[in-house]
Amino acid sequence: MSGSDACSPAQVARGSRDASSPQEPCYLLRNMINKSCWKLLAMLALVLVVMVWYSISREDRYIELFYFPIPEKKEPCLQGEAEMKASKLFGNYSRDQPIFLQLKDYFWVKTPSAYELPYGTKGSEDVLLRVLAITSYSIPESIQSLKCRRCVVVGNGHRLRNSSLGDAINKYDMVIRLNNAPVAGYEGDVGSKTTMRLFYPESAHFNPKVENNPDTLLVLVAFKAMDFHWIETILSDKKRVRKGFWKQPPLIWDVNPKQIRILNPFFMEIAADKLLRLPMQQPRKMKQKPTTGLLAITLALHLCDMVHIAGFGYPDAHNKKQTIHYYEQITLKSMAGSGHNVSQEALAIKRMLELGAVKNLTYF
Ligand SMILES: *[C@@H]1O[C@H](CO)[C@@H](O)[C@H](O)[C@H]1NC(C)=O
Ligand SMILES: *[C@@H]1O[C@H](CO)[C@@H](O)[C@H](O)[C@H]1NC(C)=O
Ligand SMILES: *[C@@H]1O[C@H](CO)[C@@H](O)[C@H](O)[C@H]1NC(C)=O
Ligand SMILES: *[C@@H]1O[C@H](CO)[C@@H](O)[C@H](O)[C@H]1NC(C)=O
Image 1 (spheres, helix red, strand yellow):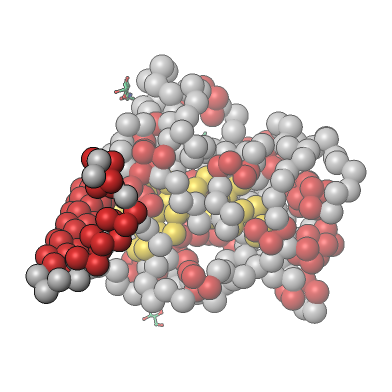
Image 2: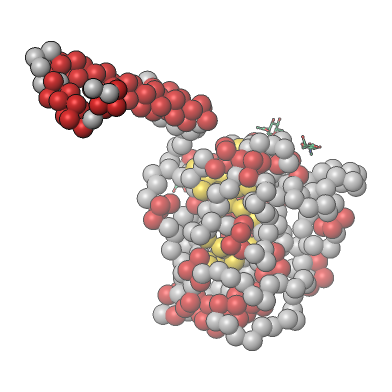
């Protein structure tokens, strides 16, 4: 017999037959169990490593995964609290005021308005009718169904820079943003969630898809009749009007009409009247109006049960170098002639803070 015969098929076959001797199956079985045991152990170890890695990467879930679920650390929310506290500012106003304008109020019943824009819709009914026919007024079910709405109004102020408030901001039920304030690239400081964004044509971001979520409500704040015309030409793809704006608004604006809402000018009226004590009928020359930021707080006090603010406040008037926004290099000088009185607004916000109607997340 040569050595090569040891590996002949015959021998291998015999070998396997030999394996059926009384002791061998036991050994093989043990071997198999051992092997799968190791495999199982290795897999378990892998799962464990992944779990540990995952929970470390998300510290807040650590306890939930390994011990017991902890409720998310949210501040207690008292239903109706914001409304109650704000009633000291706005008087006995009613939550029955629709937040957004509705077609039926201009179609079936011609709701009379005491004021022209920005405080009312007098004289703009026809264009409004056409705009409301193609937009929507509903508040999303996800917000509607909340028992208590926690809201944060994110101002555009420089104090958000390096604030690291992004995660905290994303945890609110509603995040309300203003104008063209960017999110992309600033997530760590301002968060990435946008439930609502208030804007007017001149303040609309040219790339709305990048700076909003697919379900963000884009809330048009109309200051003048042209603002309704602008949104109509955009959404109905009519001939664009270029005149009548103080800054060129986007001519092409890629949004879904179902995302658009028209803010009820009632909120502009009470922000001007109750917070800033501006006369409703002003001479043409001294037209003063609330900023979008003050307007957003006013809106939040009607829509939410808890209202926090971040990124509000301007530099001192004598601080000529400090930039005013977290995302661009402009100073207070750019506010001249805007029709906003920022010191008057600061007093109004101070009053809201003192009443406890709102709470500040950044220095105010
Ligand atoms: C608001 O209405 C309530 C009763 O509905 C009344 O007690 C309260 O005095 C009113 N407040 C103001 C500021 O008018
Ligand atoms: C923000 O942080 C960066 C990097 O740490 C720093 O260079 C910058 O000066 C900070 N800005 C402000 C406004 O504090
Ligand atoms: C702005 O408000 C301040 C504080 O109320 C007031 O003193 C000032 O006169 C106002 N400025 C204008 C231009 O109305
Ligand atoms: C809110 O503003 C006050 C000053 O008005 C400040 O002392 C406080 O630190 C601010 N809160 C936060 C969380 O920044």
